[in-house]
Amino acid sequence: MSSSELACSYAAMILHDDGIAITADKIAALVKAAGVDVESYWPSLFAKLLEKRSVEDLITNVGAGGGGAAAVVSAPAGGAAAAAPAAAAVEEKKEEPKEESDDDMGFSLFD
Image 1 (cartoon, rainbow, N blue to C red):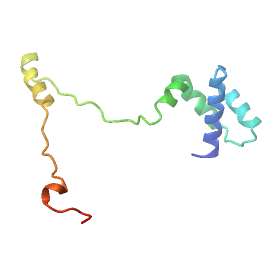
Image 2: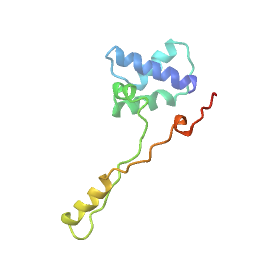
Image 3: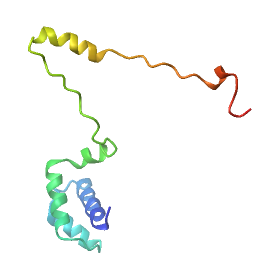
C-alpha cells in the first residue's frame, strides 16, 4: 500500500470516528494538514467508495475475503418434484477415510 493510500485511509477513519461526513475535500484537507503529498485523485476515489460502503463494514470485513460462490442447481424440466432428489444428493455427506496414525504402524518418527 502506498503512502498516498495509507494517508487517505487514515483520513477517512479520522473523519468517520469524529462523525463528520467523508468528502474528497475533507480527506484532502486532513492529508495536507498531516504534511503528506498525495495525487489529486486519491481523496476523490476514497470519498466515492465511502459513499457506497460504510467504514464500519470495511473494517469489520477486512479478513473476510471474497469466498466461493454458492453452488446453484438448476431445476430440471420435471419441475419441483424432480428437483428434490437432486438437492438431497448434493447435501449427502461423504465420509472420508480416517488417516492412520504412526502408532498403528508400529514405529515412530522420533525412535
